[in-house]
Length: 124
Image (cartoon, rainbow, N blue to C red):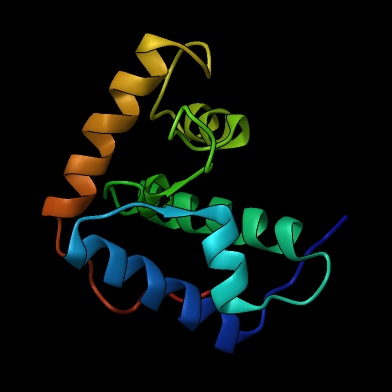
């Protein structure tokens, strides 16, 4: 299934992630969905957009901004698909749960907080 995102939603997503980065905090998938009000299927659209952004960041050799988005569960980690995407992009290797994933995620978040992103990331 192919999922498309409007330029307005894409730019709103980038703005939310930039705000989270500047404030040095993480945001849940649910909070993003509530703020951005993506059309159905909203979670699939958000997931596809975050994976697309991860690919853009990886190609530019930048930290993955999508690492700022986490589940609201006790783990406070992104969903399994984030780690699978990071592995496909050559950024992470290993099981998507456990100490290795949590440690890699924590270091990636720090890298995102400390990085200044250019403004030209647009959907292709």
